[in-house]
Image (cartoon, rainbow, N blue to C red):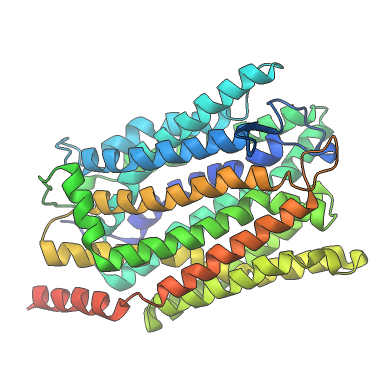
Length: 459
């Protein structure tokens, strides 16, 4: 086997730039695009208001079902990937085939061609659900490849730092959407076309980056694996029988759900609660991104010295405080809205850095621990089992948020201040619950088992 170099890791991590772009498109702008405010200038493209059981909106129901489809498909794809006998590897062939469909489906979500809301409801459902399927077919094999290639604990932390770095930089470009949209409008495009052309640019960039590692990296140069032969359900049962896996997965479910509430509503927090014009949102988002990037070296060093548990707990506590501060923002002096928003962005930089870097490497430790104990590589199944649980949590958030933000809306509007405050409060409750769970994680046992195994191999 070849030694994994830093350049190989960087190429492997480049798709995360694309994932950052697409995730920002869906998490930060999807509800804003399809439940538009008057200030946005966007047309009403889908059915508005509660349409199911008196509590769910069209977009909330569609996206929630999409997350369920995504979660269910995770273990199926993981099992196929883990047991694959393709000559070019278990992971890269999947990534190569599904890179372009993954990118294109992200674009078509925003390209509903009709003025008929009923038709657009169906269009939105088809491409959101398609996006989640293609996401799974690409990202489950991609996520399983890293812990297979990288065995050194320190290098694994570095790898997930690069992994997160590209995701954040991609998100940063995604956060520039409103500025690019304003530029497009300046060229005479309508608001809806300005948004779509911006996302077209993102799609082209994303497709190229998704394909790059499938062309450059030869999986067989770095990976030799013992393929599992157990049935899918038995493999999943084994994953959930691991106590460390259950605890880390539950913690990531809770903090991920809290983060989902925040991401889905960030544009509303800025424009509706803080009263800041849409085009200035890039300043606030860029501040939080730059602040988190500046903290990356510190988080990386802190993690290597003290482990991942304590930084994770600290990050979740700070993020909880941030969520509850949103509930008080309307009491801050209006003339200092921009300064308040920038200070808030700096405050959340720490949890952004922590929650971008550590969860992946923490789960990789747990997966490596299981491989040491069993001697079988089931990275795909473990990743899928974790994704299944956390995505179910995200689907709950996605289903609830559009229904919450309507609470308190005046006649003729789709956004209410009371609902926005509720999203922040509920998000904070989920995040503080994750802190309690992470305290139960026995990181010492996991890391000592891995290190003892490595020392035994070196003898």
